[in-house]
Length: 209
Image (tube, rainbow, N blue to C red; front, side):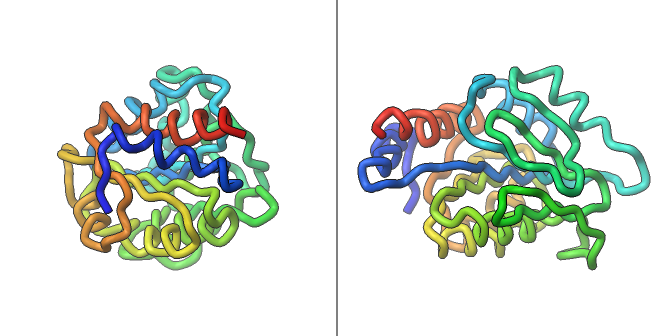
């Protein structure tokens, strides 16, 4: 089902039945810096969920992604390290040439296992591990990018009861379109509405506790 921002508040009332989102997994590729910057810049410093990010990067060069994003948001931003414990209000960026996995104990694992759909880090692996570890407490967001990475992982998010958001009219629509084609997308939103949706789902939901 595809819903507008006007209906996000209704979904946020899952708290009445015990629901709560604890992690947001973001995935992007081409055009992703703009999309990620917009989303993270609009989230408050006390955002009460952890954020994990896969952005496809050139594996041959050191990434400045965490440094760039940290200057554009009130959130804490860091390049993920193996063994990091995920904390609310912090965004963890997958380093180049490493898959980023979320563990059930709330820690992160980096691995250089095989490429998935020709990429590493893989959104599919991030979403799969997030779904397995956080189940209905996870939100997956697919932003601008080419290719189909993330389209398999959102199925796991949805199967475990989580929520899926895709960027509408993205600069590079391949990844969001492939996600939409799975039938697992809850919200298709323009970029400017995604931060508000996350705040309503994560923050407003806690207000009903």
